Image (cartoon, rainbow, N blue to C red; front, side, top):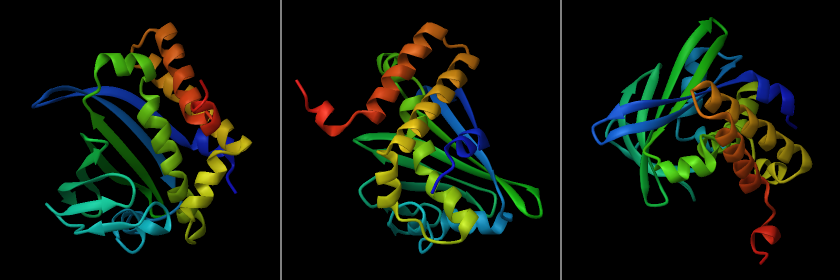
Length: 216
């Protein structure tokens, strides 16, 4: 179903900071080149009928200042839209508000670079515990469906992707993703020992079986 090494190597991961009105925020950015033209990738990311074919059912108004809700996941408000190049929105989940920016750049007539930047205020303790992998691994997993959908043109069952993520191959993907986010953190100036420890905790968090999580 998924070539683990190919998907891991196809993506670029960056860690950084941005200054917002509320203060400094941390950023995790993931990008990948898809074999599709700009309009097709834009449609896959913004068409309410197509998003469920690779991610989750979505409701609301997908327009400037409109509210959206991903079933069982995040909701938010679309703050900026520049079709077919970019959009930004709040990402409201678990009682916290962060932001996402999606940017599309044509590499040529048949290839498009997809880039997603997640911007969030993360306190120092949580960052020390998990680093960028907490959000980064989640996006690595969440964007598997988009890669498969763009490549095949077919709908991707989110439940199958979820089941795959719990398999040996899925755990290998998570481990490699966590390692790459650790490397991106070190490249951004994080202490290597701290980044390694945070990466190990992130890997354990995503690969821990439910029975293990409930064990005492």
